[in-house]
Image (cartoon, rainbow, N blue to C red; front, side, top):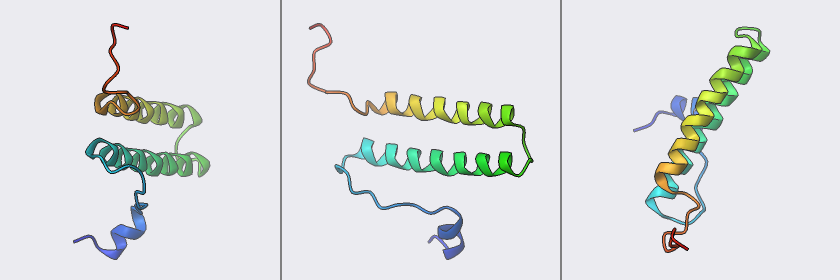
Length: 84
């Protein structure tokens, strides 16, 4: 069971989109991306990390999210023939 502290630190929004396993997984990945970017922004704003370091961290997170989208085939038409 998730504690109220975890709900406060790691909030999750409700998903209202089309219920498919790949959409739910991507939504979870997207929410984690947003949470981590928020932390990185806060660290950079507070002077704890450099702007360059913040950029590289966000860039790596973006690559991970993009890879997740591709692997889950989000936005692709499963019935589209790639030969056409």
